[in-house]
Length: 342
Image (cartoon, rainbow, N blue to C red; front, side):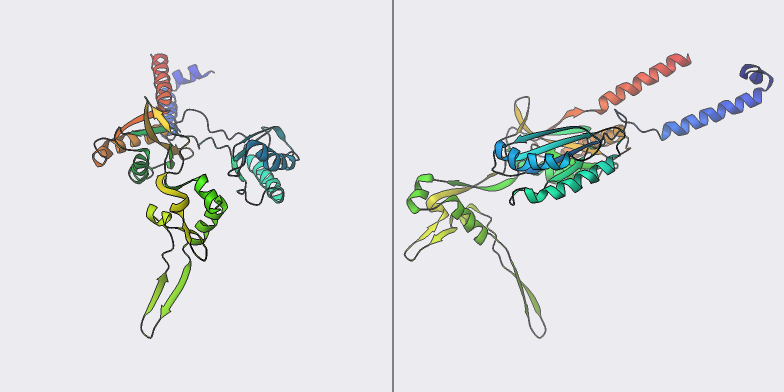
């Protein structure tokens, strides 16, 4: 007796089985994750280390090679590649598919910690990161203006847009691409520095000595207790220009005598553009297993309600939206299901 004969002889049983199958299908559909690619964590570990001011040859000889020599002894490595650039070293370690990612990451951390004693003392500690399939952004909101600088746009993106988007459910993090942070830039005149006998090291030493805020304790009385705060940090260009670099018996050399200070962006070597206009991008990173389409719809709704809080000259758009491909795939699946059903 096959299933067709059983269904004809027992129509009630066939109807119940059909209802059960439909019920489980609806329940599974409601819990089905929606994303472009499967959540697969490739056994890839990245080791990065920064050494500001060093060129590529110094990075390769003093940082990259000692790290590679220690990492090479880990079993299960499939390939090992490195990139040494200005002030930055990055090593990518790919393991075999049979290697557990957590075990590989622990082995790499152990080897990197052993190699730290061979690295320069003033370089940043190496960082070890795992390749996470859910750490890729799915959507980018662009912020542009033909009247404001990138510093102002970065402040709007950080204080307004980012604060609103990171409260969306199932959002793991929000990053700002092309962000420009305020910093005090010191421009030195080599001719004036040579005339006064001042070196860049003297400027750095004066900054480390004067631009600092230290704990000052407290004042206690019979009935009161006051906390003392020493206002030692400089905030304005005038305060930096008045910085005492060197004080001799008969003269005082200030920062304004050998250069000038101005308020500007921290990074001036890179910025982002779209359609020829500089911009700042705010990208959204989902949590593992989250529904990407629901996150994108929530971002669209939040940005629409946020327009009234933004200045009139600020224009928002979308640089990319990976959920478009997910929506197209779902529509294609639905069409195929309907055609098969008919």
